[in-house]
Length: 442
Image (cartoon, rainbow, N blue to C red; front, side, top):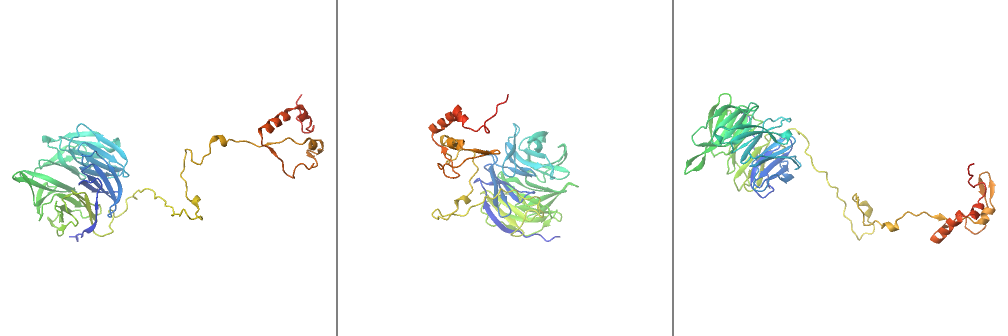
């Protein structure tokens, strides 16, 4: 038998929403822990250190998140009356509601492959539904449940869709058409299933019975089914198990947890314990849910006070042996160095300004920002009369009235108007040398 892994305490954090943790799941694609609360809130945390990643209100207050499913394209949350899919950044992809949804309890992807788009949904109602993820959660198939008791838990393997009803029985359905292939009766009278785990050909359940003053009494054993022979076997436990998960790396190893915070691994192939009993540290309230990472190196627990407690085989664990894909984060915000406003040597131009399409405070009013061109004054008639042409260039001596390489512009409106009138007068045109005058065509 393989040496069992030793899990130790890593981190404890309080989930958003100020409510009990009703569902919890470790992402099989990213380094994320997804948590659903009694108030309809969904929060994700990055890595075993529980750094908050996203947080959003998935369902209205008063509608708890009863189950979660992780798809390659997003997270699917279940409330008693709706199914909702969000991308991992929190944006809503679709919401599915129906008159037939009034007490949903469980959901499960029908295939673990990346291209899977089929989702099974059921609850305390007389139907089992199949939803198509690629069609915005549209109901594509529904199957009636014999007895009308509904299904409390739904799990699947490559062959069957195992559905545990509220009467303690288990229906093994065909995943393609939802037909019942076999029914497993309760192992004892008045038994009700509390949780169920399925991996390969091994199906394990734990439950309770109403045997004392109509109060549920948890069973001190696990029921193990081999789906090749359909014969149950029992494993005795030292505490009442209420939650079950398989360690997929070890194939036949199972973790069972009690509400008081005890957990232990069992080898369901050998029908014996595989580790000593452990107690969850920092636990002050009852455990409501837990999950195991795909590489079996991390375990996350949730309790009724909203705490998330992470255990692992080491302090720096990862939830995947190989990185499936890089977790997407927001671009980091560039921070600018601090500046003293009293320092005259500060370069304020180093602070970038945001791109703005609207008016700025520094914009001048339009009446003083009109384009105006300078108008040169008229040429002195003495200069025009003394011009001598050399080729196409005319030369005239400086009469001393103006400084060299300088020429004044007209700045007054009156001078501009007078210049325009003078420029249009015949006498002014006669002062222009014939060489520069425009020749009209015949």
